[in-house]
Image: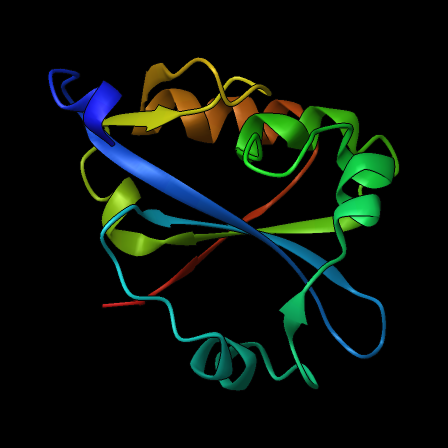
Length: 132
């Protein structure tokens, strides 16, 4: 975060999750939001939601650990991964979200409306969650 202290916008963190049935999820939340995976598991109605293996992240989304963001959904051509996002991030369409552009040595700002358009362009739906 020290490298982003002067960057305007909401810095985001991202998780690659899977459940017992093999369903996969990208979850995006504000970087300072505590994310309780057990609560997300309950809301989704999944079984034993957990972090996916880094090999699966590479195979399915083509990114290395630490580089995940919703932009990686463009690499999910089979549309096998669901996108989950903290509802706070999409409330204001002009809110700038700071995300990695498929590499962890750079950050990119995109407004919430632009992120919605990007995700729709990849063929994925957005499911908002109340993580606060």
